[in-house]
Length: 478
Image (cartoon, rainbow, N blue to C red; front, top):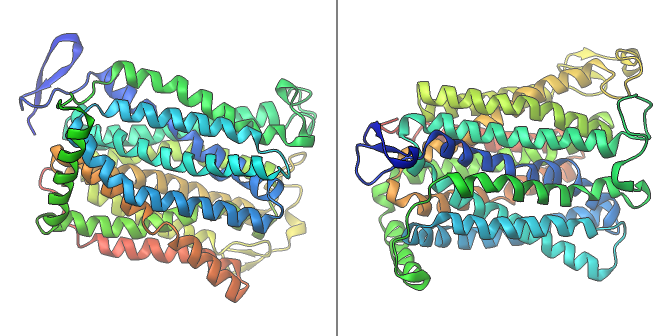
């Protein structure tokens, strides 16, 4: 790909390669800002606030709630695995990726808003509506990623791929952090503490009796998503339409996808990378989903502590995305990804050495001694809790860095004209076995009765993917 050396009209930088016209700085930033719009869905709904509320208070029992969440992710995972490579191929053939992003963004916004109606112990009709919304949200979220990721090589030169990808992940965590802090100030803490800077009661007249402060994150995420998608739609240039209509693009795209799959021997390096990514992505998913569950079971953390935990980790995850981008641009995507995965193995392994009675797996600790470390603060009052938090901080930075560098490595490995197809396969590699980490964790935990051994299965998957990654040849134009 050529070097950018002049500016075209409307402030669009033009590469010396005639077919590529890169976005202006504003267009590139607006592309990254879409992560700021989109990622709070994961942080507030999937991980820290709404999903735990649903499992504990909406379903008939916590076990039933966990099963429903798992079933919803299974259905969405199968759907994504089947359709994401196909839609990616159609996107490559048709161009106009922003129209696909717009459609799936609207679905995600409507589905997130629907989660407001998940009242405690909802009747069968509302449970059905919410269950469908959960499935639609998971599918729409992943499909927005397919088309958003595939825009990356067309809006900036390869020398900036890592930095721009890292900026997007950093902004995504920053947006989630801001909404978590707002939710804590506006809904979670009012009425529970007497700090003067808090409202006297949850805003908007929300009642804790029907868990309004937990349910409101659905509409909050929906509005946030719609508002902050606008800059990308206005300022980031799209790949031009190749004409011929959707049906022609579908036939052309599916034919090209078939050729891509048949010629995977030519892309053996990419195939090995996608295999490695399939496995370590499952491990990272297990860490994200179950780290809060592990902390709650090990230290007895409740909703308030978990929200503070999420806020703290999101702060450092923001910097993890930026640091990962710098390492990527300076040392290459493969090496940056190896560093990030190695850091995950080290930090999560260290976090598993802490419990209420043990610090670093060696130092016996009396939990009663630690209380009073932070007078008047009802969370993180023991040294093992603080040590676990410290390990979690490094884990959050490393996971965000790994997401950013994994994405930019794929861009560097594949031809630009096939990016949507390969990002469809990339989505498939991230979801085809997404049941694996939760299943392994559940089986080992149930059979041993040991939460630590169960959670460690996620670490095993990251380690396997880390080893396979050594077989991937770093791109020459890295």
